[in-house]
Length: 173
Image (cartoon, rainbow, N blue to C red):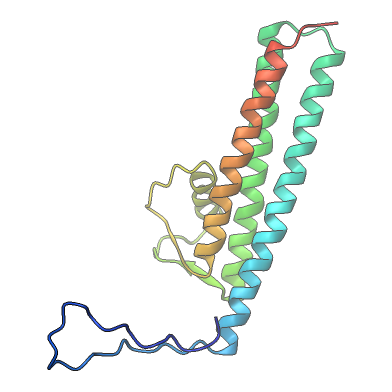
């Protein structure tokens, strides 16, 4: 990761008398490796934190709907609102990570109009839900964090779907 890229492979369509051209080598300095390490660290921490938040929210939904005599539609609404709030909070955690990463110089956003936390939060919600509109996109090593956020969002939204299914189909004792 911290060395220059290898020269290009020879082109199989090249004629025998042509000399192979080399790709330009790009040297990654220590600062580049440190930025990548910070992005990986942010991804690991945010992945775990959002997972913990979501486990707590799912446990809360399961225990609260078991103890109280909700109707089926009330259980559905309670689970929807509680888990949606958890998802918004988790996207907010990633937005904080993007803002902090931008502050540290890990990366940024290609658009000039990303100048408030609400813009970063909007990007995070779009990315977390795997919607990916493309009107705002990260640069540098924040791209790695964006990929991890989309993966995490997909996994946790799937967990929410299974929790909602269990809440709605569970028989009351």
